[in-house]
Length: 139
Picture 1 (cartoon, rainbow, N blue to C red):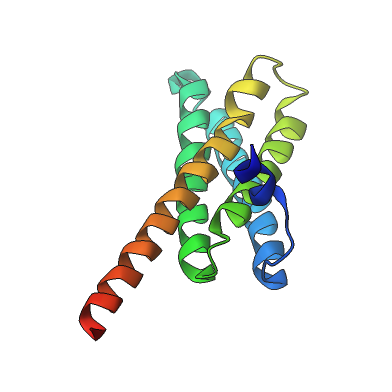
Picture 2 (cartoon, one colour):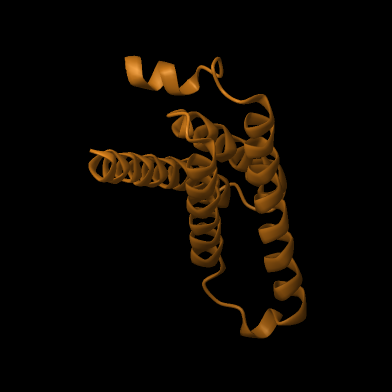
């Protein structure tokens, strides 16, 4: 429980990176959902499995964003940036999908924080491995 509280505490983060994480999370959700909406309008008769497409797209996009943010940060606060990016993504997904389908809101919405958590965790592990290799080379 203490780890979760420390991840949600924005103190000690780089302000510009914290704001960037929220903006990137929201922008990814908006851009991806707009793209899928456009494709559904153009190719309506050929579109199947849209719910799976939405879940995978949001998840993989947030994994990538959180991974990159954690690598850029290098301050051992990558989980905080990732979680806030995922929460911003979840809010945007909820607001956009709420009018269409209440079953898609939890399915797609929770993919944002889950993907961001995984991406930030991978980024932190990558940074720890890089630090260990650097210490090994220096000694």
